Image (cartoon, rainbow, N blue to C red; front, side, top):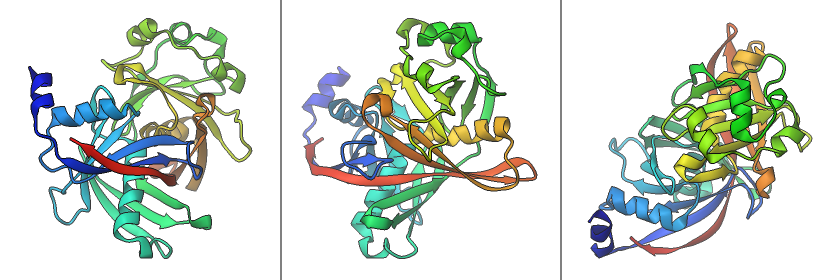
Length: 313
C-alpha cells in the first residue's frame, strides 16, 4: 500500500542538479544528484526518487531547523537513508556556494553550515586554480574505534583474496565510524586490491552490522602524489562499489592516527579511489595531531557540475 500511495501522490516539479565529486574532470569522481526545494516531500517519496536516480547517494535540500544554518540535508542511497555522508556533503556545499554566492568563491571562500542527522557540519567552499570549485568540511565528530575486524582468513574468503593479502606494517582490520561505520581492511599491495571480488553472502555474514560496508586500502598507489589507494563496498546499501567515499575517509583519520602515529602538526593524506571503476577520484584528508592524539580532521575535494533539470516528485 505504501508504494501505491507514493505513486498516487500529486507530484510537484522540483529542480535538481547532478555533480561529480572529488574530481575536477566531468564523468569521473563520484556522481551525485541534489534535489532542491524539497519541503513537503515525504520520506517514501525521497527514497523512490533516490531509486530512480540510482546513484550511490541522492541529496534532498530542505530549510534548516535553526535559521542560523544554511540548509538541512537528507541523504539516501538507492535502498536506505544515511545519517551522514561525505561526497553528498561536499557536493551540496559546493552547489549551494555556486548558486547563492558565486562572486565570493574567488576570495577567502564561503562558509556554509549544513544540518545532517549526525549534527551541524561546517563547510568551506572556494574557487581554486582553473576556476574549479573546491569544498571541504570539518568532521562533525572524531572517529571512534568500534572493535577489531574479522580474522584475516574470513575476510580474505569474503573478498576473494588470500589470507596473506590482508594487512601490512602494523595495520590490522578494524571497525571505525565518524558517523557511518566501516570495516577497514588493509591490503598488502595494489595488485591484490585489484583482485578483490566480494562474495555477497560471505560479505554479509562476515562483516559487522545489518548493512555492512568495507573500505579496503593499501599504501601502493596508481598516481604519484597519492598516499592511499582505496576501494569501498556496501552491497547492503545498494552500493556494489563506490567511486569515492568521504565518510569512510573521515573515519580513516582514526586509522591513520592509530597505525601511522604522525608527529604533532597538520598532515595531508591524498586518498585515490574509483580507479577500478573507471571513475578516478581524489579525496584530501587533513589530520590535526596534538600531544600524539588526533584532535581534528577535515575532508575535501573538487566538484564539477554536470547537468540540471526538473523532476516530478
